[in-house]
Amino acid sequence: MLIRSGCCIFAPVGIYLIKMESIKVIGFDADDTLWVNGSYFSEVEASFCALLAEYMPEKELTAELFRTEMKNMEWYGYGAMAYTLSLIETALRISHEKVSATVIWEILALGRSLLNKPVQLFPGVTDVLPFLQDKYRLIVVTKGDLLDQERKLEKSGLLPFFHHIEVVSEKCESNYLNLINALDIRPEEFLMVGNSLKSDVLPVLAIGGKAVHVPFDTVWQHETAEKPDTPYIEIKSLVDLPRVLA
Image (cartoon, rainbow, N blue to C red; front, side, top):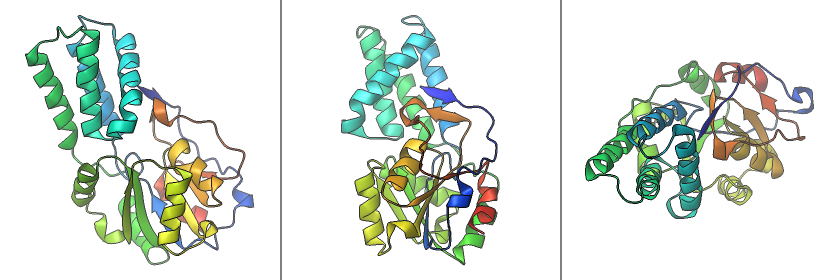
């Protein structure tokens, strides 16, 4: 289930308490930070609900789908392929296995369509990355299916800007610490930039790093979180990032 947030306004949360002089490495989330992603899942979810309308109303069906995704998370992780498996399982369960083979094929096609979507970069990405590349080591830290993320990075044309690509099963404190150790830097020398408070901000702040939150207009229910007390920065778009670092 995706939750639509309000208009993003530049909000320098604790900006005067955050010193950026020590930053050596900037990590960027990929989906819904560098390029559009959640909107495509919203489109597929709407089509899925239309296919299964005879079995369950849309609101109830999206809740059932989310329940399936959460149950399957430890087995399948994140990404389009995991999502497609959860779509099929949900369809079979709520129809009591009466859903036709034709509908299952249509669901598979919906899932496959996620792998063929164009990589639509957000405004400013191709201006900000080369500007920052001269001053910092830039890396990607993302969740999801490895093959799909590699494909999107290749299609994006952004690979030359990044020193390192890290695809993790979960963005948790231990994985961030492992990454920081591999990069041979201290936590206070790392800045994470992303659209998720839960994945890109909270765990990084918890280990002593710094974070910039760039909200997107839709947020997956699993990624919702309360704003932390620890100072971080929130900006409207990546265009504002160089100003924050300056």
